[in-house]
Length: 433
Image (cartoon, rainbow, N blue to C red):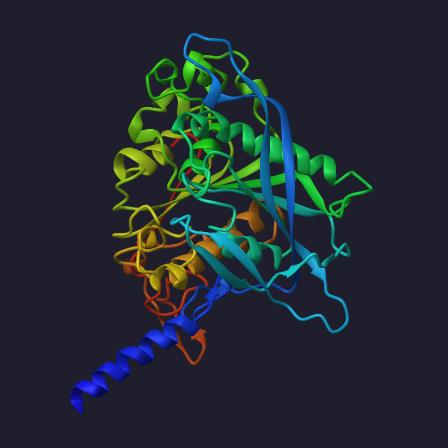
């Protein structure tokens, strides 16, 4: 009987797992204040963009003529919406996973093709750029969250870099900065196109970019961190020294940067530990940037990676949020899909997990700080900077509240409940530091 009971319990747990939804909009009770969704309903649409006459890295041979092609990009757009009478929030996404043979059904709050809300337009634009490999849904929790707060959010499927079309790394190295700028330019044009649902909806002049891993690699470049001249001719780099287009030593590099990008949010940006930047390259960054990392990141590196970028960008105002003991997946990926957990082959499941941290909790913390940062720099909402003015190590802060009133010795992180800042560090360096 005891054995039967154990078997029944395991079967019950398995059935419960199957019944679970892959929700991207979960906000835990212990989440910081601004992780909660905002007042807007959310719409979502999928658009296809084509950048003509891009250099085709995959079909360009070293020493040969540069091949040219039309580069296609799929982009998911979240935006404030006006729901029709009787229309309820909620919808699903079919997302290919890190195991391309498995597709996950994600559940969120956004409504497919909902009517845009233009009452408070134009909204600031936020562009999301995933890792290698990844896809446009990997950070969808942030896409929905920011749209509910009055942002238009565009998340890119980077061709040659998604789970189902992953190709040689050189394509990603060359195309990331270009993809981010091309999507920004295209969305700006659509915001002034009377035939587009985006007409009058977004303000591309106030744009923020979120970049995770290789998305962060492209973002740092677009913020003014030209790649090292030494890396241009390396065997790792694209053929024919094409990376020179994004290098500090190219006299045309800085003139190609887009001044509409007003702020960056770089999550575990890859490249520093692999020699893509020197101190003089990072000194070219003058755009405010929020860096986020785990101090056990073995992919991008921490001390020689993300932290070195943060410290080297001496001409910018910047923050560094560190998840103690977290790895490369800190903050960004949504929780591991149940379709992967239930599969016989769970290859790829670790792509969505961290050995120490709960993913939903990490998502909530990241969404909180992304809200704070973009609200401050893109919307100039008064008081948001106070959420960033904290005791650097959350473990050193004192939570002292009596009957809902803060006592004189209260120094806890604003928006965080008791003990919930433990395991986090938030540091700041200003220009010249």
